[in-house]
Length: 93
Image (cartoon, rainbow, N blue to C red; front, side, top):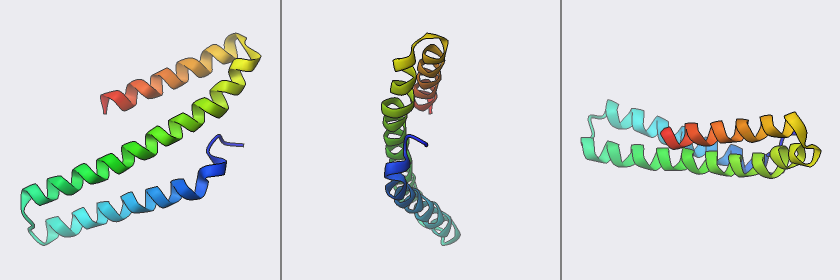
């Protein structure tokens, strides 16, 4: 079972919102809207996607990493490294 299973519907709702924001950005460009207005909407979509990523990461750590840590050993070390790498990617983006 995935760590986000209990929050799946909430995650899908967030992603649909981001999808709608992306479509809205396309319409804004098609309609030749003001650059700053488009950038404001890009910021909102980016924030929504980052919020989703943080929530998913929290669930991954609480479920997948915590379960692996209980067992210890190489599997636990691999899950911690995997989570650290994911955090690094999020910070760089």
